[in-house]
Image 1 (cartoon, rainbow, N blue to C red):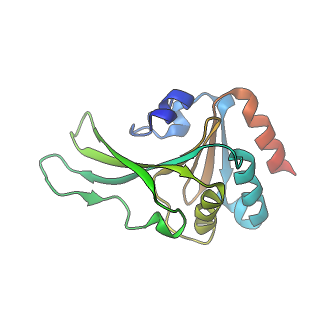
Image 2 (image 1 turned 90 degrees about the vertical axis):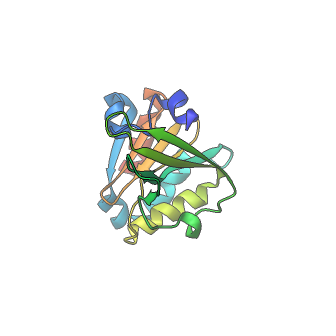
Image 3 (image 1 turned 90 degrees about the horizontal axis):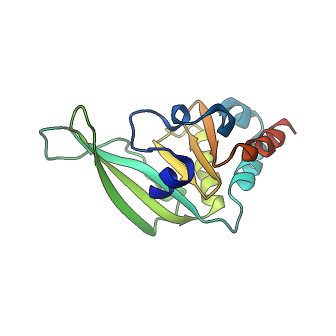
Length: 167
């Protein structure tokens, strides 16, 4: 998750969603409905963001421990192992400032672009979304049940993605 902070200036563990942490020129929001209408566009989008030679990582919220409790509560009961081959991973904990809850995040390194596409495809088919972000050195992608959010490292990286969507 250090890469997210370093490359994009995003505190992924913050209560504020990544989309709201970034200036306008570096972000793009794509309605999931558009990708449902044009499934091939989803494949081209992932290929445009995550080139085969780029190092792709994924970070997600695994669980949290409410203040005063000792047992983890899992944020979602969805397993990623159907879409991502989980191999190189590490766990990090963050304490929320106000409530003192402990949040546990997992980062999986060296994810393949086709694994990112499979996750996105599962959302298009109605699978429940997780709090998850896929990223390389240039792009950060987060998808939920309504939209796909793309954040770039630099302003000039967004126009090529917009052109791809307009084709």
